[in-house]
Length: 103
Image (cartoon, rainbow, N blue to C red; front, top):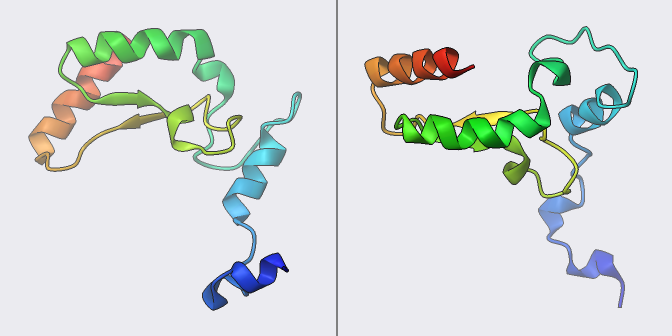
């Protein structure tokens, strides 16, 4: 049986994710990215992100290391996710100030 027969028709024309492809390139050792919105991994030391997660949560800010949002197992280590669902603007501002104070 061909795998193509198992894929939904709407998936046949799907192309690669351009952002994911860019991130593969900029994450290569020695690569300097001038792309906006992609922080230097040096800004977020990996060993520190896990520690920060626990400290920020103790301050009532929902924070998760970004690696848990990537299925490939080797992306997102230099990222973090803040939960701001159902939060008003004042709460979001307080959370960002709390995070900034801890960093």
